[in-house]
Structure formats: structure tokens, C-alpha cells
Image (cartoon, rainbow, N blue to C red):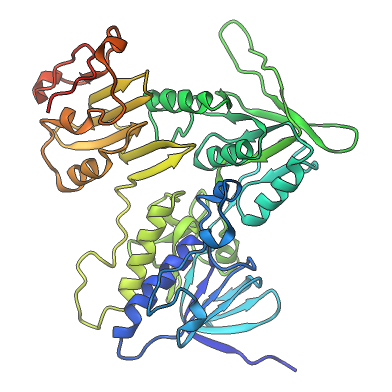
Amino acid sequence: MTAAVQHADILVIGNGMVGRRFVDAVLERRPAAPHPASIVVIGEETRPAYDRVHLSSLFDGADEASLALGATIQGTTVLADHDGADEVLGDPVIHLDTDARTARTASGREFTYGRCVIATGSAPFVPPVPGTDADGVFLYRTIDDLAAIKSWSVRCQRGVVIGGGLLGLEAANALRLLGLGVTVVEFAPRLMAVQLDDGGGRALRRHVEALGIEVRTGVGANAVLVNDEGCARGLTFAPTAAPDGDIEHEPAYAEMVVIAAGIRPRDQLGRDAGLEIGARGGIVIDDHCRTSADGVYAIGEVACHRGRVHGLVAPGYAMAEAVAAAMFTPTGGSTGDQTVFVAGDSSTQLKLLGVEVASVGDPHASGDDVVVADPASGVWQKAIIGPDGRLIGAVLVGDAKPFMALVQILRNGGDTSRLIDVLRPTATAAGPAEMADTPTACARATTSPAARFGLPCRKASRTWPA
């Protein structure tokens, strides 16, 4: 007997962090709509949406319930408690027909929709090197991945993590909390190369190494070492080219290899449906997150906006809010910029391995640099000022308290003449004698004199002016 076809005014394909944020945004707006829309969410995993950013907390006393997502709306966080809302778990959509406005899941369930939001996220990038299929090699993406890592760890003394970005450092923390010695391997010349400059990368590296984690940057994985039983026993590296000949690198020996080396958009569903795909992957969207098919949107890491796939959760949340606002705007009404996804500001604040890390605007922009550097306490703070005197980027490591102030200055075009007062360290300061020969506060002009901003470079003192 053929199952009945279920209709959804809004069909959400994907039940990750961004998908759930969109659902919450819809539920918040829906009561005010004249005809509340029905919504169905279809997820691949058997669990409801959860926080992937803090997975390592599962090895630090947290339980799965603490990672559960969902805003409290009308007294509940459970989607099924809302009228006209349904959640399908463990049954991914495998076929999407954007002309007929239908979707089919792996089990054969059929859905029709009025509007569809694709939020399938991304998949881990697995380096094309031998040995990644060996026992003891794991991805770091889901709760099930962490369960497998924990189970295997009882036979391990060390683990090596491929990837020194946000996900890689979270994976390193997970292995550390399991009591393993850890090596982090990053192809780029510094940790968190996308968010941090060289100074920020050095500061973060000092923090990470202080926890007993070995860091190797500027090296690329060559192969996973595999023993006679087919189990991982370490990682080898490709030689590094140098003027005097290639530099060979010692292997990193470990009984576990965790791959956290970046992501790729999970856009196959969109490809098969004939949606426009970006040159480097991702379903192409416009400023309103609309795809090339009528009534179909894409949000989060599966979306390609103006040639770029955003790998952080904050832009995905902004996309989710924009689409929800657009769907619940009365005809002829005005929402200003609420229905537009603005990608210019990718400011992010994180806490990794107990270290505060933040970037504001473009952390790699060229301009005049205002820098506070304190190697003893591991603080690196840099603000970048453009030719017009406006803030264009900033990096904060070790002390991210100025983050919100810098975000407001960036967004509002605020005064930059006293940025040193915004950046100065606040809580980690000790006596000035400890840093007598270490420069800690410097406005370093790269294109014009620092005095232009009233910020002369000066010798260190941890006694900061009010």
C-alpha cells in the first residue's frame, strides 16, 4: 500500500544548527501570520538538532541533552508540540523535483511543498592520501563520530589531528580530555589561518602548546601509517620545498588519526535537482538566499553566496533569519534589510581550549595596525584601520573583551582615534617589571604614520592609562 503524500507549506531539508535556527525563526513569526504555515523538517541523523561547535564538551562532563538546540517558543522546545509542525529523523531526502515541488526520502516517503529550504550543511573534507580507510581513522562531525572516537581511545596513547582550524582544535581538545597525547597538523603556516593573522596565530599556538599539545604547521599529510592488522599507527608528511633542498619531516606516531581538515558543501541534492552550483561547490543563492529554482532557498554551509561558501555558523544564522523574515512579510509590507543576507561582516567570537579568540571584519586587510602584544600572558590584539580612517578588521587572542566594541565601530563607522583604549589588556595584567623589555602596546603604521591616530608606539607597561 502506497503511503499518503504529506504536504508542507514550508519543507526544511536538513536538521543541523542552521536548519533549526530557521525553524525557530519561523515558529516565532508564525503566530502573527493570518494563515499559520505548516512546516516539516527532514533530517538525516536520528537525533534532533544539536550544537556541533561544542562537541568536545561531551568528554568534559556534558551530556547530549546539554547540546540540544531549539528556542523555547510558546513554552516548549519540541517541534512536534507546535500545531502544523512535524519532524522526520533518520530518513534523508534523496530526490528533489523543483518543478513538481516534491521531495522523496530514502525510505520512500513523499512530500509536496509550497516553499523549500535546503540546509544540508557540509561534509568533512578527507585528504586524498593513502590509509584514510584504516581502522582508527575518524572524522569529527557528529555525536556518533565522538562515540566511535571514545570507544577506540581506550587502546590509544596518542592521537594526531589533521587540521588546525576551528574544528581541528575542537577535535584536539576532545582527545586531550580523553587523556591522550595530541599532535595537531596544519598545512597552513599558522593555526586558524582564516580567522587569524601571523601574530594571532603565534599567540594561539603558545596557548595550545602550553596545554601539552604538539603543533606542526606548514606541513601536509602524505599518508596514514597502517600496521599489519590494518590499524592506524601515525601520519607521514610530504617534504617541504626549500632553496637548499627538500626538508623531510619526522612522522607523527599515534594509534588514532582524526580528520578535521575543512569542509565541502553537501550540494549533491541540489546538483541532481538541476540547481545552479558555484564553481567551487555550493548551491548558488542571491542576496535573499533564493536559489535558481522558484520557491527554493538554501542556507548555511550548503549555500554559495557571491562565490563564497561560509564555513561558520554565524553567517548561516543570518541567512536563516533573512529567509524567515522574507516568508512572513505581508504583501506590500516593508522589512528594510531584514530579508537581505549581508555577508560583509564575518565577525566571530570563540573560546577554544580555554582561549578567547575573535576576529572582526577582514583580519587580513592591509592598513594601519594598532597592536597590543603581551607574550607573557598570551594576549594579541590588532585593529586594522583603512585609508579613510575607518576600522576594517581586527584580531583578538587571549583577551576578547573588546570584541563587541570593535564590532560596533566596524558596523557604525565609529571613532578610531582612541583604539588603544579599546584594545588595552584588562584582567591579565601583572607588574610592569615583569615585562620591562617586551613591547606590549604599539600602533604600527604600515601605510602612514601612527601619529595620524594619536597612537605613538611605546615601550611596555602593564599599567594602562584610564
